[in-house]
Image (cartoon, rainbow, N blue to C red; front, side):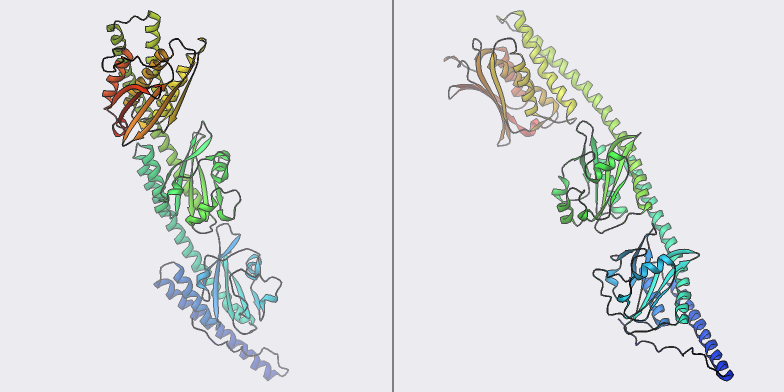
Length: 573
């Protein structure tokens, strides 16, 4: 960086005693005023050329600072601008430490520059500004090698924009004329900055409004909830320059905000836990119904997940709650990788986006409900046909059971089908966990012992896996028959015992094993010849799911096992 020698002081203004000397002094002062005017005119011409040739941006500010240095013959210059709130000054250009720009921020009234801005008055310090009571030692800035300081507020049309500082290595007492020159230049620079600021603001608003319109069109064009959420986070991150964007939807039953979409590829981040309503910034945004911001999440005790945020390089965040007809449905959270004070404009854009997203999300939910009703109608129809087939099969069987027993068996089979429908109404639309089916059937079976003076314990263990509704109904009927067989035959005249249901996956096959410690199988038992209706149903349904069935004695227990391909079980037919 070019360093200039400290300029020589302008001629003395001591007033002489003689008339001749007085005239000479007045001539000197006139020449000085002329020099000041010429300096200002020259600076204005150079500033005009810069503004004509350069587009608005940080580079223009550095060109203006070089003009200021040349005119004032100082060693360094810097510009600090007010934020939208008018309460803080941020370093935006510095010929000595450009790497500090955007990272240094002080409150109005803080330090010498803050005082000058607050009082709208220039500050002149000839040497050792650190001895001034207004001086502020800012961490990371080496300020003590500068001796003199001239600070002039940037004011355009009565509007306060910031301040410009010039400094020298050696002590120097700036004259009133020199301060006037810098003040005149500062007025012109303030006009240019205000103009460029307004242009930049309009351009940013135009880009953001364009982004809002584009995002709104994209999410409105999709009927699928997951696609809407993913499009929302991806577009907001890309078009509005956020590092990470997430959407959490409200689980009304548990009063928790569940992470449903993010454009972050980090596995740990995508698996973040749910947040309770009222917890952390996102939870409070939903609870209070207002946007919550945090300039530095790493310094906040309220933020949950600071370690992961630090790992991802996240610093500031804004949480915008989603409401539809005054009803909370979720929250949009946007992160930046720098400490940032969110402006009203930035928050307004996000709130506008969220309103559009909320409508699209509710529309998608209505579409899902409509699809669910159609699917439910289809499944109920199939289930009723299955019930009819089972009843006809029972009528065709010549059994010695009483009418009450036949009706009880039919009720349990119908209840097994109803179990699948009940679980589908609480879980995903097209997937259901086999373990949940087994646990529900075991509970219903145990309930049937009440009033019969029986102590039969049924336990369900193993790993869960998802099934399509079609296979879930068939597996539920299989499980029901195996439980009925274990209790009805294994404990026909016993009052105490245990039934174990084990579910697992091995070699890409799922298996369900039902064992009991009741009566053993007859010695002449042949599963291929056994004609009991329940076992016939199990064999037929096992073949329907592409599997097989076997029953026998193992270590003194009756063990019935059904195995079928897990890939087929997860496919709809």
